[in-house]
Length: 175
Ligand SMILES: CC(C)(COP(=O)(O)OP(=O)(O)OC[C@H]1O[C@@H](n2cnc3c(N)ncnc32)[C@H](O)[C@@H]1OP(=O)(O)O)[C@@H](O)C(=O)NCCC(=O)NCCS
Image (cartoon, rainbow, N blue to C red):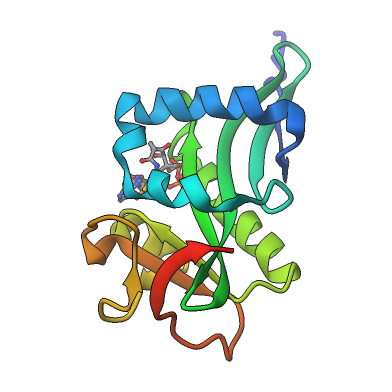
């Protein structure tokens, strides 16, 4: 009887977005969101926000057979809300065939850790509360965070990174 050794699971590496990753990240985001992505309120924010590649995370699988493959991404940006420096998260996507394995939650955790290590006080995003409440986000209080275009306020979510971070209030503006 021959015993078959199962192939080892591909190693997952989470690391900050490098300049050369940009085209692959853009392609992954296009596949995940389709052409509608540019109509999102988050895109209005990104038009004036400052990209923070050092806080943005990419998930790569390293496999002897298939080589390096991008599985997911979480981009981060710098903005201000009522004068307070804030990190804005998005787009956030995991490749279709790789979902529901916890990669998304790991990407969010690592991006938030990087922001915290950089001294940031809050991460803000526009997204689905049922998902993001599982990774530490809650609704921004009241209607105090004013996005640059109309938005369902229930989708404006924030995660504080410091115990004394306080509540965000005011318009989302350039950093
Ligand atoms: C959202 C996304 C990044 C999650 O990636 P992932 O690696 O599958 O996430 P995780 O493995 O950490 O979590 C999977 C769980 O979240 C749930 N989930 C995924 N998207 C959800 C959503 N929009 N709302 C509520 N739950 C959601 C899954 O059903 C799964 O639930 P289970 O653990 O009970 O089975 C991925 O589904 C994706 O790329 N979607 C398309 C792009 C998108 O919508 N991005 C988010 C913008 S708000």
